[in-house]
Image (cartoon, rainbow, N blue to C red):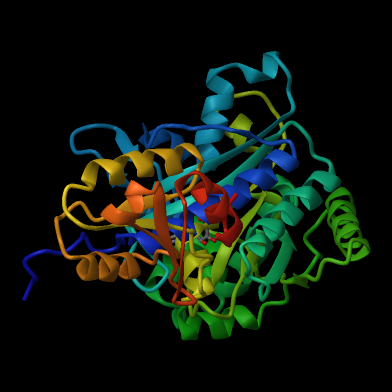
Length: 418
Ligand code: HAM
């Protein structure tokens, strides 16, 4: 039976603790983006449906079955950010201004997927797209930046998987090889893969069904389909990553579910996540601009799935924000309480009180519940002498001190005062 109140399937409510984790993730990634010289974009949640049909690919899963359409319109809730950034670049003719841009973005994406752990219909991306260079060192920078962000939030255990799809001609060759090999065993594949062999052979590699996996695993995939230049690009990337001490696993079965990729593709996975194990992913998309009718310009990027990163972090203790609680021991002290709160806040000390008129005991209980580190008790007698009581909740100690010394004392005592 449907519960009376429930969120939409495939969406999550963030509690205030989760919001603080999310905020710290945002802050840390924004610091890193700034350090690496990336600039933020904020693009709409709504886009033309055609952008993704042309960009992500007609035969891709996203376009086939996951687009969240606005009824009666050719508009969808954006399923991803890459095609959108390309649309932005082309619309604003950025190629005329300076054809090397490093962008990042944060925000929700929408896909009508069958919900399961780590697979949502609304989820958040932290993404980056760099437009205008096909340098292998840029591939390395993008991969390192994605890893650094994951690192910075405390996820040390993760794996980087890499592959190269090569240029368009190489991709065609690879598709052709897969088609030829799998056509011979077509009957053993699931019905969706039987269609994929015709429409989009690369997608068969991604199928999660055991019977398809068994057949796919018998394929001999490697660097054989890559032309000389693409082999060079990929080998150089592996060398650079090796020189920088980055651990990676070369996975020739990594093809990615979006059709715009060429050359380098990668995924960062975690063993904490079960079947939906990608924390983030990315790669090059050197043909997407021309595919969308624009200039021929190379680009590379990545996106991390915020909810998956949070899942992998699990219930890790978050650094608590310091809070000072003001309690009143006596009637008619609300005004003094409010004045003191204003003073503390003017000094950047996070502080709160219980505005419901309750006994001191009840106020202290509430202060403890909201995690106050320090409590200031206002008492009529002490106030007459311009004094207050300061109670340290972690040590159950208290002292009486002059009001004028209060903020300095609090700053000394607070662990996380910035
Ligand atoms: P993607 O692999 O579709 O790539 O998504 C990137 C990440 O978003 C995934 O690795 C995963 O962590 C998270 N994610 C994807 N779908 C869901 C879902 N339904 N529920 C929860 N999390 C999800 C892209 O979107 C590309 N635009 C990445 C990129 C940027 N490539 C180049 N530039």
